[in-house]
Length: 454
Image 1 (tube, rainbow, N blue to C red):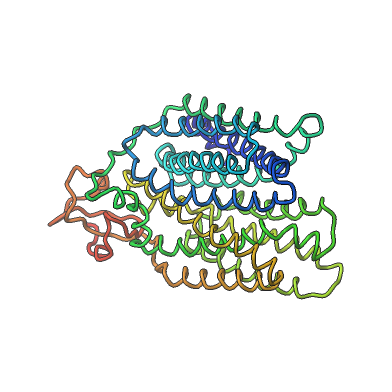
Image 2 (cartoon, one colour):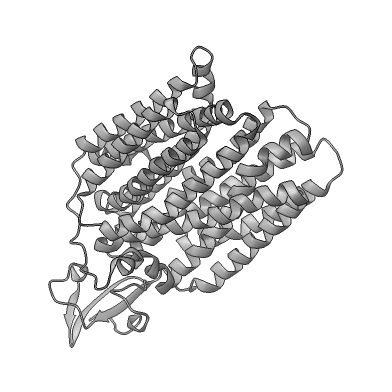
């Protein structure tokens, strides 16, 4: 898997991503302590509102970035986002009002909503070979999981000899280092941006319309919802399960979250080989169905009145949640790359970023409010039902033949169109064979419309 790091441009961008993630993790710890200093016992409410603001920024800003794709150089956009994030992190230690925290969090997350989809859309251009791109997706998944484990431990170590305000400086350093690495990377020239008719709303929703047009992306909408249900259960209610339901120590909270990360990392390490033999559809849909099964097992653990088996069972459930989420999330970039032409990729990745976080905007408060008001079992039933329904809909919406090699003839593309590279000229058009896709270049009626000559 590490062989993909031999590519200098990708290596610089991957390191930039990893450093920025560590900086973000430090900021998360410091922000919790800052909220406690400002709001005291109401710190939880402040952090909950900040999380909601983060999701609103993600959902609202990412489509705007997609609409601007092609007008702003990608490197300039990513560097600007890093510099804005560094400036916001530098300001956070000096705030003393709750509203100031909210404003700065919105600015910080808006910049992240500009950086992340742009970064994701660049990688397929840097690594055009599917094998290399799959390895890059697995490395990215590992980076997120390692950050969730490493950043809290690093923050705890640093807090033994410095105040939490200094953690924000670590965040500033992470974003500045990320900006330097992005500047040092030579990015490939992007495909010309499409000329879209219509106003600002039409342009901002172009990527989202792809998700409602292409069958596999419609399925991905529900896969995102299934993952959001599981990750919300883990993120919001781990501390409740460990401290209240099982009466275990504070340190066991980190152990439970570590089990979730370990399950995710194990699958991310295995997937490059698996996806070489098994179709994305099979892997991702099985991951979604596994989420529903784990919710059923979690219901049994929650309903049990006692027994020492419940703690290892919870660790197993959390590891299974992590593994299933990774089965869905890791191949997602392959689907988007296969579904959107190069000039539409930034819009498509921005739409995925926005729509997936809209799912979390729904499931995070649901996990918290239901768990607090009606108990953990009610939260398990509600979120498990969402995950099961989403998985079933994903299976129904994703055509079984998707991804198969299909011969077809293009009759409406100009001979110089880049998609026709290597195609053979036949009567009335150009014929070639590749994986079954349904996208703007491949309307559904095109599939099977021709046979390769000879």
